[in-house]
Length: 184
Image (cartoon, rainbow, N blue to C red; front, side, top):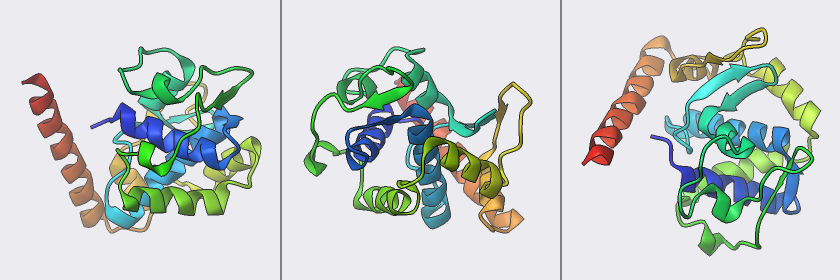
């Protein structure tokens, strides 16, 4: 299930790597690539967000809503770490340390480090083009947005159909359990 505190800490980690500020398009692509990398390594995304195909590539749906200010942030969530978008850029509200990133496991941080090492040097358009050209789970939605099922990402990562279905089912089962516990 989507974890706003966790995705805010993912964003804060990457913003810290990028000098505390970066274009929101680049940050979104880095976050997506981190979830994708975690799916390849561990069979599950870090953020728990839903993935959609949009004009500029794959997007984490709720994270985009937070970036754009379209949903209210939870206490201790996005707005606690990330400033409102200004001139198409996001920035850290304050300096952070690894101790501030208590929602992220060492495995999560390792994934974020690897994604930063591979893609952090890219500009926003270069990384966008990378997701268009190297993430076959994305198809142009022609001005709309279309859900990208986890199964499709797993298949694009080279998992067999059976494994992709099993991993996707596990994620959906965890989502269902999280919803039950959230309702209690």
